[in-house]
Amino acid sequence: MAERTLNFVRSIRDFIGFSSIRKSINLRSKLLLLFLALTLLPLSLQGVMSYAHFSQTLDYKTEQFTIDMVRQINTNLNRMLKDFERLSLLPLYDETVLGILRKYDGAMGSGTWAKSDDYQKMKLYTSAQAYDRPEIRGIHLISNSGILFSNLDSLAVKPVWDGSQEKWFSELRGTEGIWHLLPPHIPGYYVSGQEAEYITVGRELRDPGTLQRLGYILIDIRLEAFGQLLSNLNFEQKASLMIVDSQQRLIFEKTSTDGLSAYAPLLSHGKLQNYADNQKIALDGRSYLHVRHHSGYSGLSVISLTPITVIQKESGEMLTFTIGLALLCMAVVAILAVLVSYRVTRPLIRLKHHMIRVEQGDFSQRVTQYSSDELGQISRGFNRMMEEIHRLFHEVYMLEIQEREAELSALQSQMNPHFIYNTLESINMMAVRQRHDEVSAMVTALGRLLRYTIDKADRMVTLREELAFVYSYVRIQQVRYNGELEIIYDMDEEVNDCLVPKLILQPLVENAICHGVEGRLAGSGTGGMIWVSAVLFDQELLISVRDNGKGMEQEELDRLNASISGQTVSGQNVPPPANPILHRHAGESLGLHNIAQRLHLVYGKDSGLSVDGSPGQGLVVTLSIHLQRKGD
Image (cartoon, rainbow, N blue to C red; front, side):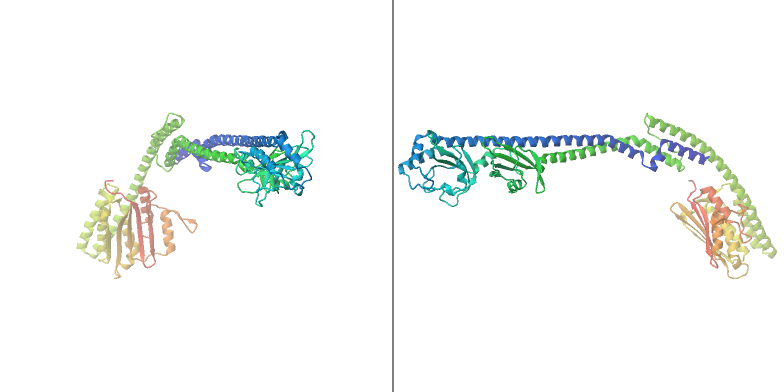
């Protein structure tokens, strides 16, 4: 009945789903994974799509900003150059300037010296044009013969200069009065040899009436003027910006923070050949955004070279922020998923634990807390099922106890006649020898034994009472063997009140006398010794009866222990004896199987009996029983 009950409980547990879950993954983990999948997957997908859209938009905006910036630079550059163009046209509207230039006509470099008055007039004119213009290094008017008039001090420039000796100056010839921008160069008309490079706006000055060339005007512009033009713009520090003319010559370059020029790599890769070119290029293993804007007015092109890593800097920061936010959201979602899955599965886990205890034999389990949902209905059904199981189990258990009581009574009734028979046989032997005093003592002891076995109705007695019975039995045996039998008791005081089955100890002492030390008795003169001891370890009471008899071989001991426990020896099953109540070894002794069976009936499978010893050293029989004190 109990087995069928356990099978029913297992089927209910499997129906709920715990068996299949335990084979793979538990329900709480499944719910946790489901919650995480339902929340994190959409969140991750949205984050990836948002980042991709933001990154593309940001890259596009950055590219457009760079294009607009380059266009604005070119616009500002045209405004500055138009101012210099206007400045180069002013001498054509001053008759004094034209008159002085006409005086010093001739081949370039043929002039010698100009009049002091002409120098003063020209100096006043050029100084007025250069006033409060820090970006202008100098304004120079040069006649056809090479006489040079400047706003600078006469010691800073040469009075006569032959421009035909310098390559950059030759570009002004044949321009027919159109202004021309000359790339950075070091003019030869400065006296100091430490002069820096300048960008020059030059023009041929022609007579308005005859269109004959009267000379040249050269306006030297400091390179810092272009730097100041770019300083007002929000320019990336790691980007490079350059200005080239129509002949791909570098006019000005603003390099990145690493100080490396981008003009030479662009020139070597042929990237300077295209105008209005906005694309991504690779230079020296690095990717750049190449933006170019050409001015139809000045013929100059403004080129911006920005590393892709700089453009994507904000995208990277956005990616870091997105990942951080995603990790935070994942942590919050994971915590919420754990809490929700715990609250959902907690009743099921509690019910599973109750079922495991029921499977182990504890039918008192009940679910005390349950809700009104489906899990609550399962819990109430579990309680009703356990009530019914408990009722059925109680009925079966009581029936089984009654059966055991009847069996114990049968065992006890079979033991007592055997004991009385041996005792009477001893009295008979003593009567033959006519030892009347000893017969009296034996009869007295026999009376005590009969009262213990017959008059006392309790099945469980204290160890003290069982030892008093053994004392009476031993007294008879000592008289029988003329005092050659000695028994020693070694009992802890705390074990006297422990409850043991009635007549559990005397058969062991009798076995030790009849089949252990009997050879040492009956006139042999060697004497027999028996030790009876009891000790308490935690919840287990150990009682041992040892003798100094002939002992047994190990193989015989193994077969005896296996016969007592019903186990196998050398691969063969050893069946219990045909008469489980009385088992004789060596022809006369009470079988130990009977005592082991009584211990199993009263205490269950945890208690038992074992035999140990060796040839010539005697045997020791040990009882292991769970503690029961009188009154428990």
